[in-house]
Length: 352
Image 1 (tube, one colour):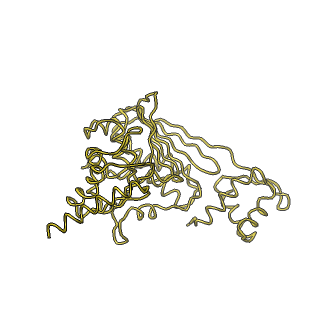
Image 2 (cartoon, helix red, strand yellow; image 1 turned 120 degrees about the vertical axis):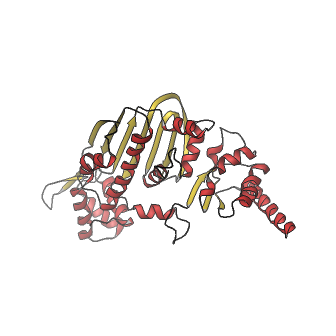
Image 3 (cartoon, one colour; image 1 turned 90 degrees about the vertical axis):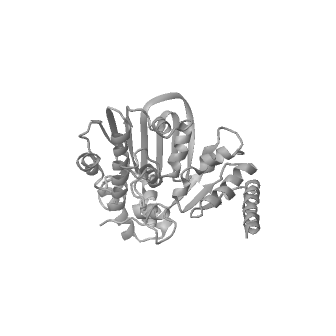
């Protein structure tokens, strides 16, 4: 069983990024950078060769290394009742990723099957295309269907005002238009497992990138039909399914999806101020399903009294089992949140 540690991930990434500039002397550079033995370095190089990430040429003394060429896969499947995501994974996709570490393959199996199942069950399309681009450093899988479009469908099924609100709901997690058959966790966890996760549908572009650890939206003038989903993962990541699932459990003894992080700025349209109770209620929708909610105020310059009151006093009074925690708020926002919390304390004092 191959296991990737965080240091091992760093070392292999360093080797891959440095080989082009130092095809003959990469081992010496790695030794100096990480202070590890040549034996350990050779072990990492052998793993990268076995993965097909790099090629070796020459004898031991004159050996040099180069990055492998890109490998591509492209196939279109009919979205009929006979298409099964586990069969596609087992017969077509898994053989292309067999050389990767166990944790990487497990992540890809979860994410690919979840996203293909979404297309099968929810897209209302006729076909879905699967494209895989493999490089020495990472792997990208693209799924594109010709259906209604994920944001438009969520907007229609949940009676939301527009497609941006569909993205806000996706960012919270536990969202599904078919609760009897799905938990609504697939897209949320897939977006957190990937290094890059992007959905393009209609005129809206949603992304979650691990280096930014936040969700964001772009709007496009050109409107695309169907849904395009892009997933990218480092071939030697040290991430595991368990680490990601555990991150969204409120306590160690919790095994369910009980904690979520919601970017507050997704409620905003352009530069509009967050001042109304309606905006707050939109943000708070379905958050009573979680034990712990982290509201991320990064990028939010200010909030109004009614907005803060609805979240930090009214919602708290009605949902005592859900804890709301604010993070990355500036001083002005923190002051408004504190004011709402103090009003809650005063109300409790008066009723005692």
